[in-house]
Length: 227
Image (tube, rainbow, N blue to C red; front, side, top):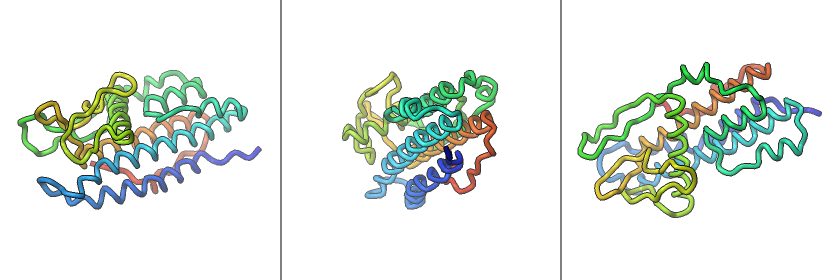
């Protein structure tokens, strides 16, 4: 049976990330109320996370097929809702039985924007995340996505975000704190979200491709959200 290359999943991921990449470039980057442009940040989160979810489902199915798993096994493997970075990692460990990847995870790092604390300068700083931190941040951004999808928050103004709909990581953990228990989602936060999922998609996919002896994947056409 012919099994498509893992590169096919990467190529489609590039297509699905085109929209959030274009949305990012539309933001005026001016201080103060961005007006209607405030809707760009939640739109970037929604589209970039959904792109990751689609990539994970397809990539896992292809990896399993290359490992000669049956259609039933593949269907069970990709039967999941809203996979995060943590879930992608767990599913790959399940199908490949390759251990926990401690060696490369110890050396892993990714830079993201750091939301200023209440009373701090409005200038956004940067922070470097370890693998464990990155998984936690990705969980937080998935909670942001849930809140936006289910109408629990709008994302274009400061507001109170509800607690976790699943797990223990709250949406507020990755958002900018405001007064009165409110938090806000800025374009910087949206970029961090998209960047985290994009970087982790590549790292986990590259490790999987190498593990099964597949040719190196080409990510040159996949949009990134470099800070």
